[in-house]
Image 1 (spheres, rainbow, N blue to C red):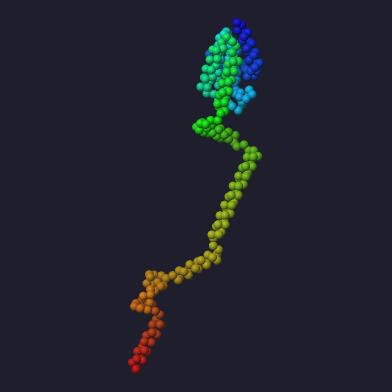
Image 2: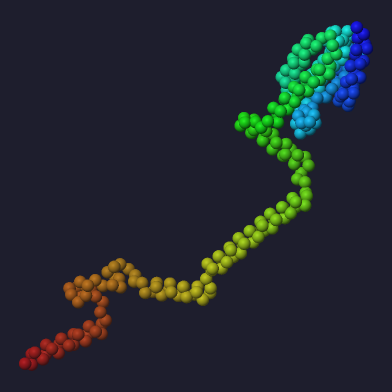
Length: 263
């Protein structure tokens, strides 16, 4: 078998099909490789609709390969690597899938077959990533990561000022000032309503003064109200009568006594 001829024809076919997705690798050759010819890299992105790349889904992998001297009768050098949104466990699963396909296709050109298998695997992984999750913990973690990313962007660049954000800020500022002005006005009116005019103040003070003078002082016995049992009966001596009225009463009694003596 013309190994060199087989390998050259396969590379021409891959270049025609993959075009810019097929790139010769200068740096990053997997450790332990010592191929006789160039090493190539094929980038694999999700293609879910009409064979169009889904740029909004971050899942990406790459396939690194090189021909061995006796390829295709022997296995090519083939390595799967994650580019984005793939864990080490994901990459190991993809590598195991490719290794099985290599064993099944020995003796024929197989690189394009490996590309197709890897592309299908990436598409399935992208579908899983795009499907809405029902795990509350995962949803919460995604929300926290998104919020942290938003805050980091604000810390790095600040809040961008656009006509929309400026108008929103202006409306909020005007509303806040109007609310503060209303509160101050209401406070002034309330204070004015509670304050007394000078005339009312002096009238109130005069009323308090009169009440103090009219109120009796001392004990209940010296109070303003005299109990009924102490009016006109026993204990009249305790009542403070006017001295002039007492003298008139005594003269009247003397005259009555004198009149009775005459008869």
